[in-house]
Image (tube, rainbow, N blue to C red):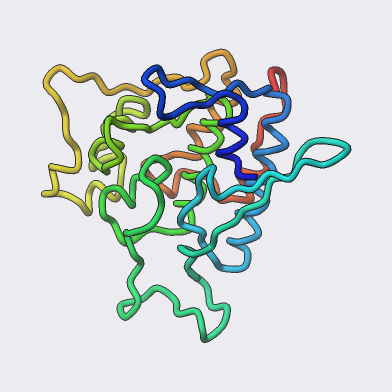
Length: 231
């Protein structure tokens, strides 16, 4: 079944009045993360970006012996960014990249800011969000509503303020101030996600950078999966 179903089986409840988180053993998380990163790395090697990575689109296969195996599914939003065959047009002036992709909780900042100049690294951002959910048991950027500006506010509370100086997409979105709402007195800070496990905190943050060039590729993320103390 899906990773979302597994999270629910382990106690996650996103609909209850008092929302509960799943409880995951950190010893199994590196194996799950490696499977997801390996799948994304293979897609990117082929020249495809998934563009809708989320727990619902990861399938869990339980083995009789050893840990479960995770595989990526649902390629309905996938797009070629390298030439694969003539049947798959590349993104260009005649075939621009769509913004109507990816569930907002897992969408990269580029997508939420309406920037069509995004790359395959939107998948790595989504993977960082999935990993954060595995470690914490709860979606990292769940806003009051599933709308871009609510998710952007939740994102900034955790990763710090989005500015033209730290986010290329923000520079291209100048004038669209409604995308970056700020309540009076609201504090935006770079907060620890998993303070008890700094190795996972650093890994998750590295996958989610406002400047995509500063974030890892999928193979780099796979090589960075924490395997030290606490995992």
